Image (tube, rainbow, N blue to C red):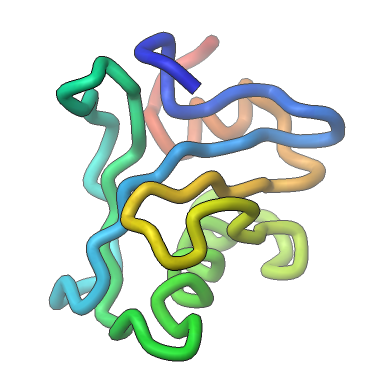
Length: 106
């Protein structure tokens, strides 16, 4: 993942680099951003606290809904306890993900 964009095609779906703010007061995707190292990510926040995987589960459900994918198709692959996470979304094309999450075409 790099400044090219927070969403990359991978296998049968996409990988999304997300910076998650747990206990954020609302469940919402705030949009793309770039960190100090030049890495692009999607900013998101959830109401759930970072306890027992609740924030990760809320992120998965929120992304699944935004992508129009089943909850079982979206999962946190890396960064379970970190703010920056890599989320896999199976069965979602790069074009669909960019359109639905970023409002743009690849």
